[in-house]
Image (tube, rainbow, N blue to C red; front, top):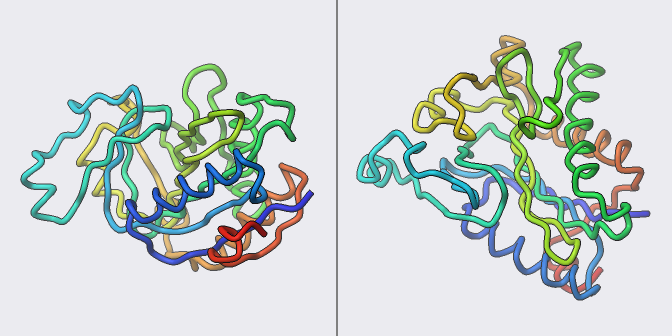
Length: 226
């Protein structure tokens, strides 16, 4: 089975959300194939379905002055931050081809990062099954996960802290948690990483875990139904 891989650069969150929504509808209609979108965002805060605005710790006026928007979105989870140096992935996938198992889908995403971090960087990462979605190094989250599923098609996805400015997480209680921290690959390794190399590693491990083959595509081609 193939999956379209769309590698983008830094994209405004609202623009990326519009792209997701279009592909989400096309996938529900069977007019395009499964797709994995990989990109970065300018600084932005998103609030999931069960999100509590009290977990945004900075006044809205202060965020506006920094050009940081807040979006209320349909994914699960509470509040999260996206910004430069963070690799964000949006799998638009029909789970009817994966046993219609949402828990397994999230487990697989976690497994991608657990294997990648262990095998490429010697970092022991873990999941917390039955508690919090995501991937942790010690008590610090390195990958956040929040998805939405309708008619068995997924959208939203994961955010992997590579060279992310961790100071920006002081704007929020990440995922609504006050007793946990966040970390990044840069913080753990003590050096910045090349984002394009990380994208390539991510595609390799994503395809390994989900047992699919990558098919690199253009946005126009995917929206046209390739």
